[in-house]
Each structure stands twice: as C-alpha cells, then as structure tokens.
Image (cartoon, rainbow, N blue to C red; front, top):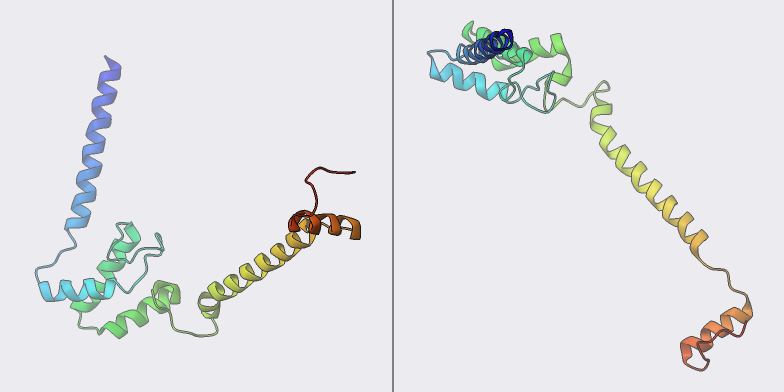
Length: 161
C-alpha cells in the first residue's frame, strides 16, 4: 500500500514539474508580436552560457530564459540592439556572442582551430614518416637481386636460403 502512495506522489510531482516548465516557457510571450520578433532575432545571435552550442533563443536552460527576459525588458524600455549587446558583453564577456569580435582577448577563440589543425597535420606527417622509415625493409645486395629476378620472372619463387 505504501508503494502505491509513493508512486502516486512521484507521478504528481512529475506532473507539477512539467506544468511548471511549460508555464515558465509560455510566460515569455508578450502581446507585441513586433517586439517578440525583435527579441527572437537578437536572441539568435547570443550564445547560451549553459548549453554553449545553442543560442538563447533555442535553449530552455534557466539562464537562457533569464537572458531572453532581460533582452525583452530592455527592448521594451526602448534600448537599441547595440546597447543590449553591449550590456550583455559587459556582464558576461565576448563569449556570450556567437560571432565575437577579433581582439587580443578573443584571439584564442579565433586562432585555436587553425593552430590545432596545423598541429594535427604536422603530427600526422611526422607519424607517417616514422612509420615509413621503420616499415621499409632494408635489403642487402643479394636480397635485392633475388627480388628483382622474381619480379622480372627470371627466378623461381622457392627460397634458396
């Protein structure tokens, strides 16, 4: 009997949690469709700091929802997109932008993929050269002559060694 009560309480908690999540998502839509479109357009240019591979428009993380709310509130207050982006960059750094500007502080973000690619190709070339050096058989003159004779069809495939 107690197991049934626990299951019922667990099911009720799940229903309440999902209803809360849906309410959290639904409450962010405002009556002004032009403002909401502007919020969505700017939100697509901003990175979710929790998910990191999604924009705040796509993410359902609490921080992303809060950032969308901040964008919405600032737009409703009459701020421009540039002012909002400047505010978020001042607060969270250039990482909040999907397309961060090239600066000395963001050079690693821009240069790291190229540097890693060059290092990877270099390591591959070194590895292949080492493998070729160790896998190439070193033949003496007699072995070379025997191989040449076998390739030319002058010798027999049986080994005389």
